[in-house]
Length: 232
Image (tube, rainbow, N blue to C red; front, top):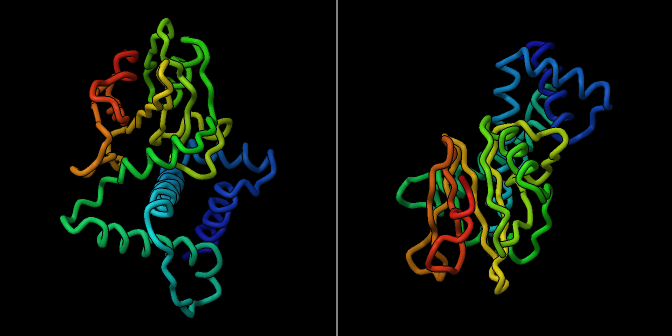
């Protein structure tokens, strides 16, 4: 690894952890726009974090043995490398069929609906369209003239900051609530990202709709789609 690569790696981790000053963050984001390789590294680390946040809710802790490494390959990179190894191992253990491109939608639904705190609230059709256009390149619209309450959005990323990451390509979760108080969530999954899956023995139902190139997976105890019918 060259000195320049090492510096960029440190800056990437500092950016993800929110440790850069405002001026450093702005300069780094400008560099990301002009450096596809650096941007790809950022997306890789974001994906690792997203996978780990899912695994943390679905799995028991695993102890690992600390490896002896050179000073250059140390610190947070060891943590991320070990985390990636654990993630890969857990996916193989949990999915004997070898499908490593899915996650447990029931576990995610139970966690989210138990204590949902929206990171972004779109309380008008204009805000909803603007938010989805930033995140997916095309505006997805929602019908607000219904008794269904659109509670808000969350990301799968544990340290998601909507002000910094509103235009990053990622899976986002929309939460809604029916008049009867039933909570419904929808996963907005860009192409190439892990998809939610339900086991056969579950009380939940999944309904799928493709909207402007984005696959939307609605998960709830209801037999018929509720949230999908509001989106176009």
